Image (cartoon, rainbow, N blue to C red; front, side, top):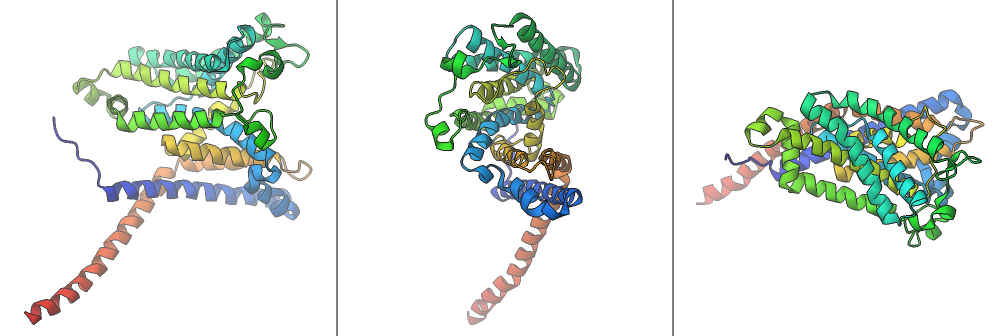
Length: 389
């Protein structure tokens, strides 16, 4: 087997630096365009009541707002990991919303109906998401059907299936007809709530739990699997070149299915983190809307350049500006302005590769210039030594 040529430390640092700079450029441009939109809507209140509140995010209503940011960040990390994991293995998992939906159903069913403890419900949410992710993987592996098509179809199949079960079959059992939502865990299934460990008291909320730490741990594990294990190498090899992977003895069909299964498990686990923290209740009457958390995961994955560790920070940023947008005074601005900013950032992420290339060229030119300037100085130092001899 041929020896792999690993990139030098300087090359790795340059690539990572250019990736971070590209992401920062996307963020800055998105914020500037958002500021322009605020000035167009209401120039008098654009800065103080608009842009500044978005930048403050959860800190505008500290500590409650920060607790709200952390509650939203945990599931967003997981859906971002779901999309990023599939990206790393050459697949586009646009079905994170459907997998998130099935994960939410599994967690709530085992919590409310079966009365299971929180850790069992959390594992079940991952299993339900994994099953819903494996199906598009099977279609991709054995029938060569594009995973984007099947994932989109299974998003809607999962949504209507879950809503029908909760609303039609679970009325009175899972579903509170008076509030048109599933029963609150705090009163109906307290054993299924993820422990707070003092987080709720610290942030003066009722749903800030250790979910954020669980999400960060999973992100680190995913990074280790992808970057430090043979299994991760095989998954990425299949994504880079399926034929070459097959020639090297890698079972590409098995790895495609495993990749989508793991991606689905991550998205389902995110739903469990959110609903078992008491972040909200499922509304089966909202049958025409897929969970936004699944699609926001695409934004976080793109902004993080599919890096599992970077997904933590990109998720925190997206949650930060989303919460900040919720604090906008509605008499001056629509709260959707934060979605506009994040949408622009997502759009710019499509050009992140162009930005990365530009920054890498600049860094290379800077290094070459420094080397060129160093050579005459080195010669000037060594020349007198030779003359003295």
